[in-house]
Length: 244
Image 1 (cartoon, one colour):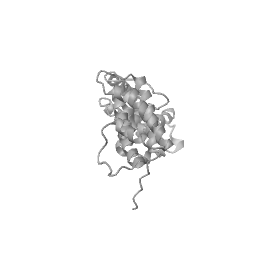
Image 2 (tube, rainbow, N blue to C red):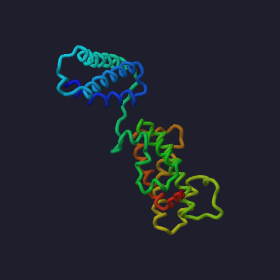
Image 3 (cartoon, one colour):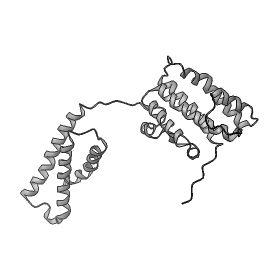
Image 4 (cartoon, rainbow, N blue to C red):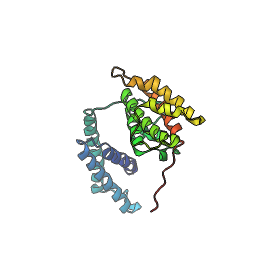
């Protein structure tokens, strides 16, 4: 009975290991055999009346022995294969979940902002978060700057209303900032302050190939750039959803 109860805890873990860890190949055969042995005793337990489960039965004993043997076999093969895998340790950055930072860094932005930024911007933020997670500071900065630049162009069109509307981005950050400075709107002046700080203290330095950002410097820039994106995206219109 203890083996049956334990099997219900083992089975989801076993399925997760074999399903999620795609790089595990050598132990997969032993894992599948263990899964089959577990399913075999679980089916017997369900199909057998309670009063007959504890009666001596050699065939049943063999079924349970197979579960134990297959579990030991799988443990040995899994342990051996794990020693051959390349592994690494990713340290947590700030309060961010490492998995979230690697797979969906754009979700570090407020939910109200996400519908206002393009898929391209989200992809750049996602790439930046992945680089940040793996301590690739300069690459992190490169992608987050691309995200800021893309949002800055949209912000320029909405707030400055240029005529004719430019078909491509302006020459550089300095041109955008100069255009923003012409505005008397307080919210634009706040954006200018953030963009000027990023331009002078971070972006210009990143343009030099000899500059390599540390993980801490990249984390700081990631946070400042997020602030700029949030400030600008707040004034962007939410795209209208198409009616089906």
